[in-house]
Amino acid sequence: MSNTITADRPLRVVVWGENRHEQEQPEIAEIYPQGMHTTIREGIEENLGSRASVSTVTLDDPEHGLTEEVLVNTDVLVWWGHAAHAEVSDEVVERVHRHVLAGMGLLVLHSGHWSKIFGKLMGTSCTLRWRSEQDRELVWTVDPTHPIAQGVPHPFIIPQQEMYGEFFDVPAPDELIFLSTFSGGEVFRSGMTYKRGFGKIFFFSPGDQDFPVYHQKEVRRVIANGVEWALTVRPERTDPVLLRYETEDFYNGAGYQGAMAN
Image 1 (cartoon, rainbow, N blue to C red):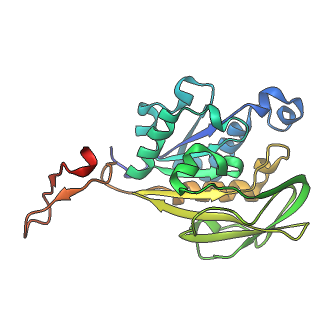
Image 2 (image 1 turned 60 degrees about the vertical axis):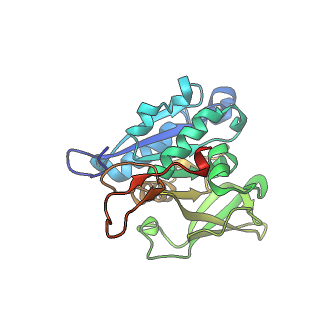
């Protein structure tokens, strides 16, 4: 599969949404009548235009919408989940994990920090401190030269938001881009990047379902920037493999069967 982006080949983005709060809670459906996944998709389209082709899938779709065929044709997957992490099939998680290691980009939003896929990629509990009482969040840019921070005010204000605070039990990030502060004095590493295998991962915390955060232009810009950043450009998507190379042959590795195959 070619990862070359051209005028005839836009960035292929899939937004995965749990889509349960919107179905079960009228007050959330009023904020996101077509679902949060649709609002997130619209924000990406608003910022990237013809540079991206964006589709949505949800938890209740067959195979959660994340079939092998869908993932093969996805450059970047955007993930929002909250109340039903346990309902996500382990088989689908393994499939997504394999594609991330092979080079598919992944954006994990808000309470996706506790999703099976993020936990598997981080290897930690991914727990944190939280409070949902309409806190004001200030999002501070700590790496203004990073592509994800371009066009984002410093700081930008989210008037109503759930508080996420430290300690956030994740590995030290490759890059820290945003740091948030809250009305109770808490701080949180709200925008971080990781690499796993050939895949690039961006975690961005703003976006509680009770508040219209994904309608906010600054949040939409960050997510769109993250989508563009998360593209891995390689001639084809392949898994990292262990190969044996003969002396002076730098290009033709041979397959290896060893302890991992037993």
